Each structure stands twice: as C-alpha cells, then as structure tokens.
Amino acid sequence: MPIRRLYLARHGAADAFGKLTDIGRRQAGLLGERLAGLPVDAVWHSPLPRAVASAHEIARHLPDVPVAEAAELVDHVPYVPGAAETPASWAGFFDGYDDAEAASGRRLAEALVARFAKVPDPGTKGTRPDVNEVLVTHAYPIAWLVRHAMDAPPSRWLGLNSANTALTVIEYRRGLPPTIVMFNDMSHLPPGLRWTGFPAGIRP
Image 1 (cartoon, rainbow, N blue to C red):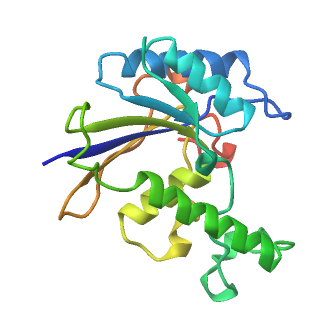
Image 2 (cartoon, rainbow, N blue to C red; image 1 turned 135 degrees about the horizontal axis):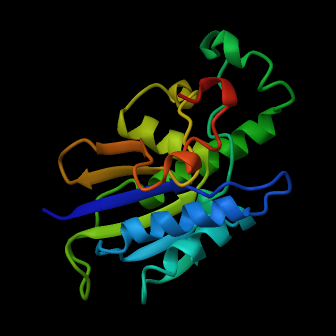
C-alpha cells in the first residue's frame, strides 16, 4: 500500500522584513541534518523569501533532491470564520478581510489540499511506491493541513501554531484517514532555538 508522507516545516526565524535571520539559518540547517537520512523525493517551498532560503538551507543536507516552488504553500488565511465560529481571543483579527480576500484564501487552501493531501498514484512508473516530500511553508498552511487530516470543522485551524522549523508529519494511505505522526516536534533544535515564532506568552 503506497504512502505519501508529508514532512511539514515552518520556515526558520525571520526578521520584520521577512528575511531569514542567522538563527533561522541555523534552525533550517539542523532540520536538514535531521532529514538527511530519509528517502526524501522532493523539497517544495512557498514563494516567500524566508521559505525559499529555509528550503535551500535544508536541501544542503539532501544532495540530489530536487527543490522547487509550490504556489499553494504561500502564507495565507485559509478560512475566515463567521462571528459564531470565532473564539473571543481572535476577535478583531479578521476585521478588514473582505469577501474577495476570504474567497482567494479559501481557493488557495483547497488547492493546497488537492495537490498534497492525497495518496500517491500507484501507477506512476520510475519512482518508489511511497512518496516522501518536505514542504517548507508557514504556520497557517500547516494548521490547515492538520485540520484537514483530523477532518475537523474549518475554523479549527485557528490556534494551531508551529514553531520555526518544527516538524509535523502526516501520512496518507488509500482507504484510510490521514495519520498525524507528529506535530510541532522540535527535538532537532537545542533549547535556545526552540519556540521561536510562538507568541512569548505561550512559550513553555
């Protein structure tokens, strides 16, 4: 039974202009070392510079693995909840999102799921039965894919944050629901490099 394994990672720590910092490069390099022994077929990244730089830093440890952009991985709000679905702590966050912006984000979210959240084609020739892909993206797309894997209501992506270069793994098998193998795992990072990207008040 072929399996698609998605290794989801948020980009490394970035500055206010979206450029990867020295800490972010160290984080991405350590994630690359962690992934180095795995049969990775491809590294896909968001078009945004912080994800591009992180992906190439990771790929230094994955020789001969192709690295390419996937527009579906761009940072975006996948679903704008209605007032009844919005937790009090998120009140006001979605002010200013008009219908066109919400629809655009939803289309991106649907495209993300359609492209990556599926089992591999068993008829594909010249490849291993399993597909192992690294997706370097942002907190919201990761939250959306986790929500989709859990078959949770659309608004449940809210609050599923990911630390910079933390690893989330989801497996897809034919005839079975997706399996979340791990979420927001930072064991490849030393304590001083963990939890960046999380609001300061909720870091352990």
